[in-house]
Every structure is written in C-alpha cells, then in structure tokens.
Amino acid sequence: MFSHAVLLGLAAFAPASAPIERARDVQGPAPVVPRERPQDPLPQPATPKNDEARRAFLRGLDYLAAQQASHQDGSFPRAGGAQHAPVALAALGALAFMAEGSTPSRGRYGREVALAVDYLLARADAQTSGAPGYIAVSVDDKWGMHAHGYAVLALCNAFTLSPAGERGKRIAALLPDSIGVIERSQTSEGGWFYFPTAGLEHENSVTVVQLQALRAARNCGVKVNASVVSKAVEYIHRCQSEDGSFRYGLDQASKSSLALTAAGLATLQNAGRYDGAEVERAVRAMWAEIMERERGAERADSGFPHYERLYVALALWTHSDRRLFERWFEFERAHVQKEQRSDGSWQDAQFGNCLATSVNCLFLSINDGLLPLFER
Image 1: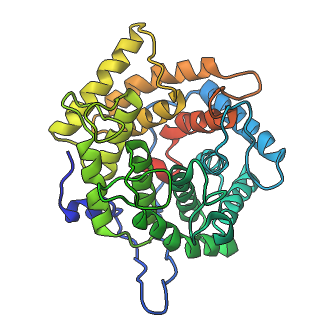
Image 2: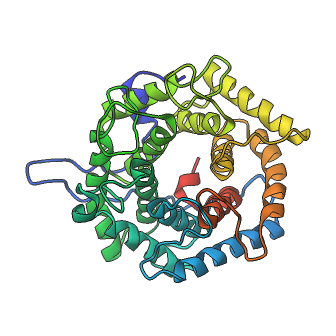
Image 3: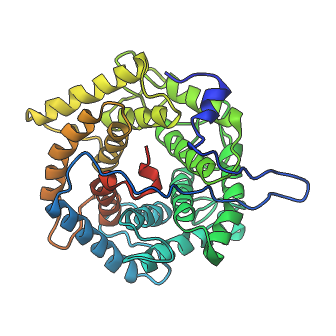
C-alpha cells in the first residue's frame, strides 16, 4: 500500500514548491518560514455550487460563532454531548471558520478564528499540558494526542493563511515543539495512542491524525523526521485487511468500518499514493458500502457518523477519479442538509453539537477548496 522507502514518505509530504525547512542547531530551532502561496486563482470545482448548501454552511458557522461567544476564552461548549473534548472542538471550529475563507486577521469570521487559535496556543503552556508544545487542557487530558493532532492541523492551516503578525510568530515558534511531541510519542510499532508518551498501546484513528498534522507542518516549513513518517505509513499499511478495509489496530480481529477505511485511504493519499492495488481495494471496499446505503440499506452505527463523513469526503476528494467524489457528494450533501436543525446546528449525542456542526461545515465546504487542508 505505502512504499516503505523514506524517499516516498517525505517526497509525498513536500508541496509542489518545497518549503524552506527550518534547521535545528545548537542555538535552537530557526523560525518557521512560510512557503509561497500560489498566486493563480483557485480552480473552479467540478461539482456545481448549491445555494441551499451554502446557506446551510453559513447557518452552521453562525451557530458555532454564537456558541463560542458564550465562552470567554475562545473555546466551544459541550452543547449536548455526553463527553467534552475542548481542544479538538476549538481546532475543528477554527478549521470550519477558515473553510469559509476567514483567517485569524480578516474575514467574516476572522474574530472567531483568532479566538480559537489563541485558545489553542494558550493550551500549549507547559505548566498546563505538562510538556513544551503539547496542546492539551492537562497532562492527563483524556483525548490527548488525538486532540493535539487536530490542534496542530488547525494551527498549520491558520499559519499558512495568515503567517504575518504577532499571532503568526507565536504559531511559528510553537510548531517545532508541537511536532517534537508527535515524533517522541510514536510507539515502536509506528502508531500513536492518546498520551504523549511512547508506550505500548496504539491505534489507527489517532495515528491518522498525527500523519495529517505532520503533513500540514511539513507544508508550512517545519522539518519532519523521515523515519517517523516511514514507520507511521507502514503502521497504516499493516492495518489494512485483505478485503481492502482498514482496521482499528494491528490485531487482525480488531474491527473495521467505513470511517476507518476512509481515514486509511485519505492517509495513503496524503503519503503520495494515488493508485495501485491497495488503493483500489480500499476504494472498492468504501464504494460497496456507499452504494448499499444509496440503495436504502440502513447505515451501520459506527458511533462517529460525522467523522466518517469528513474522511470519506477527504478520501474521495483526493482520489484520481473525480467522478466518485461528485457522485457521492451530491447524495451525501442532500442527506446532510436534511439533518440540519433549525438553529443551524447538527446533533451529536456523544461529543455534542459543536463538533458535529464543525465537521459538517467542513464537509459542505470541501469543493470550495479554500482551506489548505483541502488542497489536492
């Protein structure tokens, strides 16, 4: 599935115009230098825009802005969820606002982006999180490295869109330490678990997010350890079953799902592999489940329907055959619009309406291509 060569692992992580890497020396890390953003206009999406979907997207963002305003620190409330993951919520909320085109310094939701980014930066205080660069509410944060990965992803996107100014400098200063946390906490098997230590436990969904964070950091100029990437893509490779689906972990008996398969495929593509037998097996496994649903089959309860939707979107969006994305996106977009509540939110009993709304707004915005995360 993935090449085991370090060359492919990091070449795929480099953008078309390679960024200026920061080097480590005895005086400490040099500042991150932003890569040049292309000046050509963004290509028009193949999937036509839908005015109703655009209104749903903006209603969702308005809901998030109102929820964020109920807090004083830039975070988002639980909003009906049984569990609360404030760092992940702030990261996903920031990404959703940025997907509209806003940045920490401008735009319709510029203030909200800035507040969420400042919240994430404040959570990296070593006195709170226990380690320099670790973005968490505490050293014992239940969601730990999963949330840290999303936080790094959000900060990298914010930096790419708005590198200048004091906030950009703070992000640039933090990113090398935050990537260092990821590199040091990789397990001997190549994956990650929920805590910033290289223990014995590991699982696929946390590993996927760390690779997304490493890719985003590499794209905005942070040097990423090649061996970490090589071990991580090999770990994802070992989580694929013979039928093309991806499992929760290395254990052959561990469960697989559409969500995990989409996340595995999206990660494979992030590592630069867009075709080949393993890719096609994963696409077939995904597409068979998608077609069953279109024919009226009941959706399997993965427990993470919004996560699933976002990763299916990412996997198909970057797949070489654009027809798959366009075919699925039209059907799924209609389903998402029907699920939106009158206040602009989407509901999630497990992690709350702010998480569901952030993720569904990201989904609705993917073919706008304004967020660096959605660059092909």
